[in-house]
Length: 448
Ligand code: GLU
Image (cartoon, rainbow, N blue to C red; front, side, top):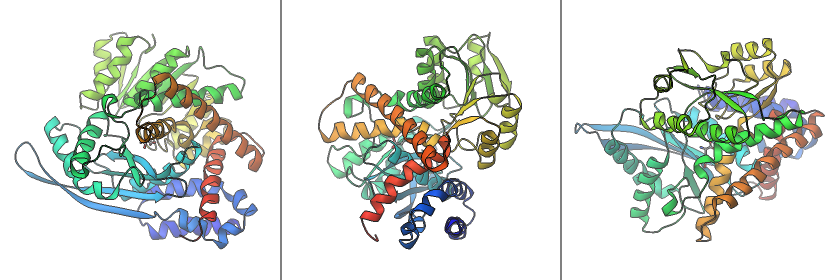
């Protein structure tokens, strides 16, 4: 039976040549499902894994816009609508120069399980473009977003597919895309989440992903007899996710000492814990320069390490919040050598499969991103409910519900890994718990 898993991994590689990020996540998820597949031979008869790894629909399109010099620019646009077994496709849009189908498919595939873990009725999808918003003027970003939505609008809708942000897509881009969507369809409806508070957005959405990661990490530590209070924490990135994480770490009495960017990392041993310091993260993001060094110029006690990763800094808990594969095998080995106990992934697929294996074999508790960063999309779904009900929820209502969801996700991961592996393995547990709900829905809905 485990042969079935191997065959499906191989098939996916053959059918999607060169899409290494997509192969990586399919291999990681499917391998951990072996005991589930053994227990349920009916999945193989229904070609369930072949169907799960093939997007229900993939749309690629041309995006044409004019830059500030009057030059015509052409980018690629994508939306992969992966799985709608438990709800409308839901997932972000990523604008980054390295975007190609392999990145969007990896994100879309992960999103199926992440969304399922939230316990909310949302399917999985993802989209984006190879457009690089860094260094572009506001007017250029607006023209690009309008051109992108002029094609995408026909494929999405509140009951069909609800996009949101991801890397390179924040409140500004969602605003420009929503404006264009509304102009074309002439309806004010909840297609797109992460909207501004005055026009349908949910209070708490900006903080949701970062808060959720820290709540998940808190549960992970608790389950292992430790308290997040008083812990020293190293994170990467300085964007919206890192900002939310910094706020919640301060609330819970932990000490954040690093942030990072493509240029290197900042070590602030006094703690990144004042309003001014935490607000600086958003200023760095808003500068459009994609560098973190200016933090050290503003706060001279902090040190900047050019070209280095924050993983070399001493900490009790490490939380990657920047992008995929930021924890490589050598980082994992160094964690094990230094006796690190906890790593909680904030960015999608933060670690290579080899790094996860090294960390877990070395006794490190790893919180997988598809569980730990589910707070963002969970809050998006709350925003969808708010829009559908034509109402507004208070920030307290949203965050209380979100906290409950994150505690529930940790429990679902821990329970599933105990049932199928007889141990506390959140990586396998997240895959299994996320998979079972979708698999059962697919079985019940027949061969579609
Ligand atoms: N891009 C985020 C994620 O990776 C949020 C998706 C959403 O809110 O739809 O989950």
